Length: 146
Image 1 (spheres, helix red, strand yellow):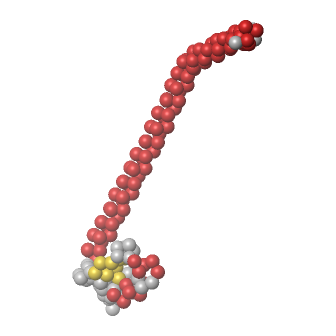
Image 2 (cartoon, one colour):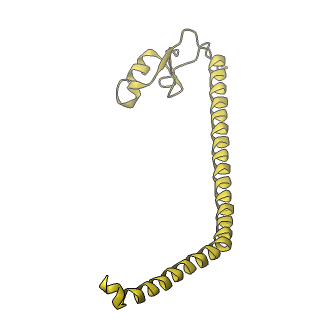
Image 3 (spheres, rainbow, N blue to C red):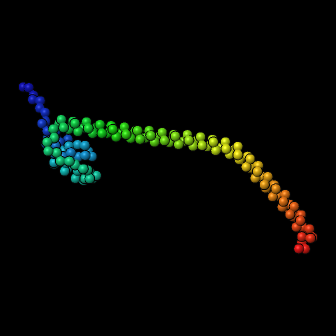
C-alpha cells in the first residue's frame, strides 16, 4: 500500500499542527489556531503582543510573509550597521581634529607664550624697582613729616 502524501491547503498552527492558523502574532512571528493562541498568549509578557486575525492563510502566503520579515530584518541590520559606521567615522573625525587642535595650540602657546611670559616678568620687575624707589622715599624724614 502506497502512503498518501498530502499538503495543507491552509497554513497549520505552529503549536498543535492540527488546526488551521487563525491568528498571527507580530512579536512572535508565528501563526496559531484560536485555542493555541489563547493558551500561549494568556499570561506573562505575551499578553501585550499585537496579533492579527487571519481569514485564509495559505502556506504560500506564509512563505512570502517569512521572506518579507527576513528582508526587513536584513534591512534593519544593514541600517544599524551603517549608522554605527557613521558614528565611528564621526568619533574618529572628532578625535583627529582634537589632536590637530592640540598640536596647534601647543605650538602657539610655545611661540607666543614665551614672549608673553617674558613681558609679564619685565612688568613685575619694573613694578618691584618702582616699589623699592618709593620705599626709599617713604623712609626719608621729609616724607615722614608730611
